[in-house]
Image (tube, rainbow, N blue to C red):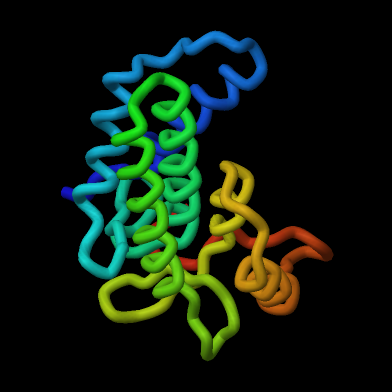
Length: 168
């Protein structure tokens, strides 16, 4: 039974984005705190979070690390603006730890981000979702996209999502 970590990040980021558009806090700050505390306190000592859920296979997934690191930064902004500098500092620190965990999902032999599952690597093009949810562009992301274009382009330009028995 592995938690679905992405929702914590999606919700937090969406609350900040909505505030940026409207100037109104619409999210439940207590819920955001509970979700971000969950991420911050349940990553392992390497800054990794083991994801699983309705679609993904359980393991260490780069998209989840990026999404939740961005959400922790967003939570730091949210709580800074809402009079909780203690939480802002804690979430900023947790995001730094999660960035270290993200590095462990880069397969240097293949020169790409990959899911790390049960001691082995599986490719998965969803790492780009982490960037779409607010994680900044960076060298490993660009190198990973070059890997996608060279290795998993199908049918004249489509990018295959992932390759795994019993999935999709």
